[in-house]
Amino acid sequence: MSNKHITIFHGPQHPGITGNMSVELDLIGETIQKATTHVGYLHRGFEKLVERRTVIQAFTIVCRICVPEPDPNEANFAMAVEELAGLEVTPRAEYIRVMVLELSRLAAQFLWMAGQSGSIGLYAVGQWAIADRDLILDLFEELTGARVYHMYIYPGGVRRDLPEGFLGRVSTLLNYMKKRLKEYDDVFINNASFKNRAIGVGVISQEEAIANGYVGQVLRACGVEADVRKDAPYLVYESLDFKVPTQTAGDVYARALVRRAEMDQSVHILEQVVKMMPEGEVMIKMPTHRKFKLPKDDTWVKVESARGEFAYYMAGDGSEKIRRMQVRGPSLVHAYTLLESLLVGAELSDVALIMNSLGICPPEIER
Image (cartoon, rainbow, N blue to C red; front, top):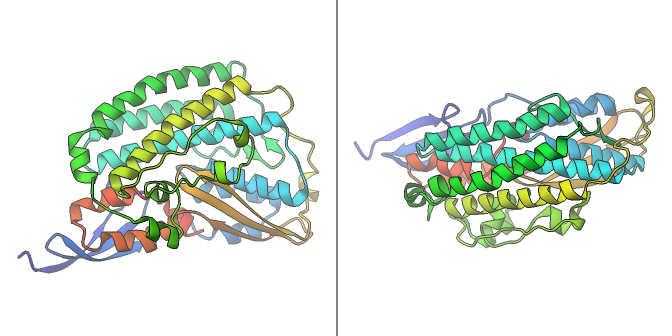
C-alpha cells in the first residue's frame, strides 16, 4: 500500500493554503513525487484591465492584485504615476504613506501567523492572530472607510488627512502589540511542535535564492540582507531607523524567525512615524481627472511588501490611459519555480507548512 501511486489536490480549503489556489500532488505513499501549482482564477488580467482605463479609473483596480496586502500596490501605482507626471507629494503625505504601509505589513504578517499555525494544528494561535489583525483593520476602517481595499494612497498624496486623535490610537495599538507579540513567541515561535515540524524542512540555499530571483523572507532567511527600504529607499524610509533581520538556515523555521523579527521592526518604524509626523497638506493640486494625461515615457518603481520586493513597470503615451503596465511580485517565482521544486521529496503533511512560508498571493500570479 505504501508504494501505491496516487494523485490528489491539496487546497484551497486548507488553512495553510494562501488564497484560492491548490497544488496537484503525485504521491507514492505520503512522499511527493511531483507538484503542480494551480492558481484559482479568482482575479485575472489586472495589467490589461488597467491599460483599458484612464489613470484615475485604473487606481481602483490595483489593490486587488494582492487582497491580504493591497497597500503596496497602491503605493507602487501612485509612485509610478507621480514619477511619470513629475509630481512631488508633501512630507506629511509621505509619512502617512509609510504609516499605512507598515500597518499593512503588520496585518499581513498576522495573516501569515494564522495560516502557518493552522497548518500544524495550532488553531488557538490562528484565532489570536486574526483577532489582532482586526485591531489593525479597525484603524484602516477609521482612516480610509474600508477594512481591506483601502484605495487611500492616491496619486498626488493620500486621499484624506488623519482623523483627530488617530496617531494616539496608533500608539495605543503599538504598546499593545509590543506586549502581545511576546505571547506569540511563547505559544508559537518557540513551541517545540512547531520547531520539530519546521526546522530542516523546505531548505533553500543562498546560491539558489539569488540565482532564481527569490525575495523577501525567502532570501533573507538564507543570509542575504536585502530590503528595498534600505537598498533603494523611497518615501521617508531613509530618515527612519530600522534593521533588516536575517537568518542562515534557509528553512521554514528560519523564514518564520525573519517574519517575526520584522514585526518588531514594523512596530519600531511606526513609533518613529508617530513622533516625527509633520504638519501640512496631504494632497497636492492635481489636474482634472478627465484631463489627466501621462507623458510619453516609462518608469520602474518598487517597494518592499510584507512578502518581499514588489515592482511596477508603467509607460505612458501622452493620452489619458496607461499604455503598458507590468507587475513583478514574489508570487510567480515562489509559487512555481520554488514551491514545485521544494515539494518534491517532501511529505504530504509538510505541504501547507512549506507553502505558507513562501509568501504566495495567487491573484498576483494572474495579473
